[in-house]
Length: 624
Image (tube, rainbow, N blue to C red; front, side, top):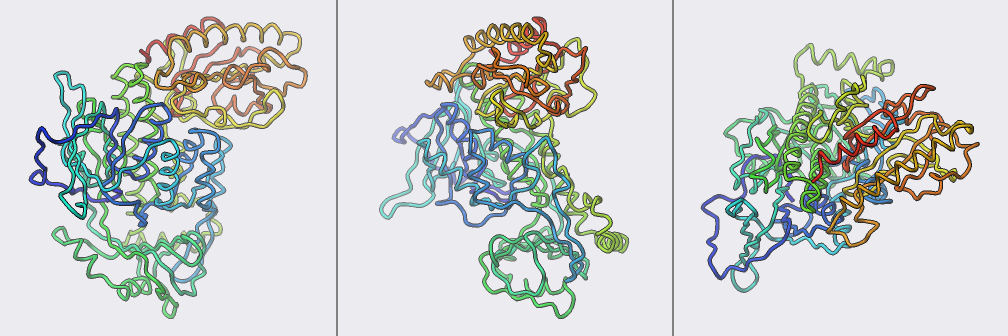
């Protein structure tokens, strides 16, 4: 399951088999090539929107070798929005990484907690330590329960967009292992769309002739998984600045099993990486580790599960979308070092961004031009991930005297300088600060000014926050904005419903607008691929009022079902504040439209007919 950090391709043009009239032809709306976490997540999201998919993977099983180990806060958020309880399936399989133990050589210097990153706008501010293999297994099981089985042992050998108006994709696939008797089977798959999530050596990217420019860093790293015997006081996460200026990263995978990454010098451009991997020994690895520790420190490998070497490629595809029919996602679109834990997470968010747009287009709910926004929005996110991981890996191997002295200074003074830990672990690694620019789907109001704070503007991630339901149950915003492919309209009523003297009339007016506009939207736009009326709705609406509701009673909105205009209370007005909505005597509330991938698509001040008309115009602009 392609998670390679290399830019070479697995199939050459000379290896492409010949297709003739006897080759079986199969049709499917979406073909997904590559069954790593990105491909599996994409398949699950599309399946939940009622779109049939087929997933092929050239390997014969999920690889037990996991380069990615961490699931960042933003990825946990989007798992939580798939359906109620979905994120718990990941939380139960991994463990939260609370802190990083810092060493100089063998000496513990300080423990840097991640809880300083706690943000009231997210419940998942800490990374989840969970191997990629486990992430894949959770997604594969969920997909199988929806009736989709991954077809292992099948590889793509050729693909092209065909038809006079480029209406579909013709793909040739082949078994990777021949049966005991006979030749490897060959098939043709005709699909409306193809998604290449087949890793850094992407055959999809190669066959679509999409360039993959970038650079290969001139040094190599050794990576080890296994059990060890050491007198180091290791915690779940550890960073060692070696006495020889080299950096070790050590993570506890489980019990006494660890992942260790250490730099192993320069990488010559003409070197044979495969030969280097074959030649390396446990004894050489142990020597590299001991050289970074103080003399006399015990370090011995008990059992090696994986010992490999890798070089770091920093590359990004020129295009994520080929002829409007073929997409790249995950490592097929971008590769970089594992530093910062951005790779798999960036890929998962690629899948999240693409799925709802493709689902809407395939349901004829949005024009095909919507698909271009996938590339426009995700390319800058790949550039961001590459820059972040590059800065972390280059900072970690600064071998100059000045760089070494600065690292020593930070370590020596670290108990007093914990708040400066961003030198080693930037907060942006949690990916909660990601935002998209204003564009054709993140639309600024034509008259009203944008909020001054970026986090409140269109394109920003929709914040989380605590609320109380009308029946006094605690709930978070992100627990309301659940459902694949759904727009969520947050109606911030400010304090208009808190005053008993005027709230009844205000609520009646608000309920009228909700009923009128939402019924129109749902009548005009809904999923045709989903038969269940409750699931085929494209819009959910939630009323959020400042105050406690103690004197409000069970009004019209309190009786509405969740998603149909139910009233929630923002007792401290912190959710209003996190969305940039001012609560005050002159404020008349705001309406904020949350896209299906939990980014702000549109916002307007006011709750009158003009404000609702503006929201209606927004939907008419972006939908078909």
